[in-house]
Image (tube, rainbow, N blue to C red; front, side, top):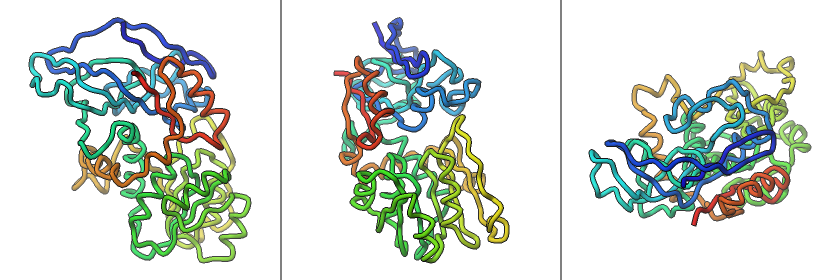
Length: 332
């Protein structure tokens, strides 16, 4: 019997039995080995802070329905192919693959949805592919340039992936704003020049040249005010956070208009229209897969939790963010 994780109510997750399925002609069956929990989106659902009538993800055929309870969600499954449909080459069997699929012990998907994992990427690290692809999308949308001053608000998983990609650029400076001391230390270790507490942000940026490009990935809408403080004339603010039902007034009454500050929404389910002449989502995903070899996943994966004890994983993410970053569910 296949088992799947469902969000069944506020701060409630349940593992349910589902009927076993066999791969159709163009499908493969995948046995899950690891799956990564998104500490942003999945905690919004867990805490009932996601819009219930919103499509779970219209860009992914593996995720259906909306975000109302009960819902099956998740998008970072790593496993091995166990069976193939009649139209799929048998060489797929035993191949390690990544699939944007909810947390489930085994499942069938069209072979086009199964992404082979190269030998250069270990399976635990592969669970971070969505986070690295998201960070890749931020950089495509913001176009960081040589000598620019960059600031990242939030040193969670997405923020730290963004820092590691940005650290490969010849920037003048890379600053992280983050309240948790452990995450500040990790941001410095992974490539930030400096990491400061949000309470010190206004004074810090008042005393220095403004940032050219700013990434708001803290998940807290109040951080937009601090991002505006860090900005100057013609600065770019990339909002990568999804706030769900969280609300906060934003101060656009100071220098926002006179300084012609740009606020850019960046969401990985689509590509910016300006990029679509040369870029596709497949190309972006390939770039992200290659970047996994440059990401220090071991520093970000703080917990491995058995799939059968998934409830503990969500409680830990929700209650101890100071010590928890990426949680990986194990299935063996």
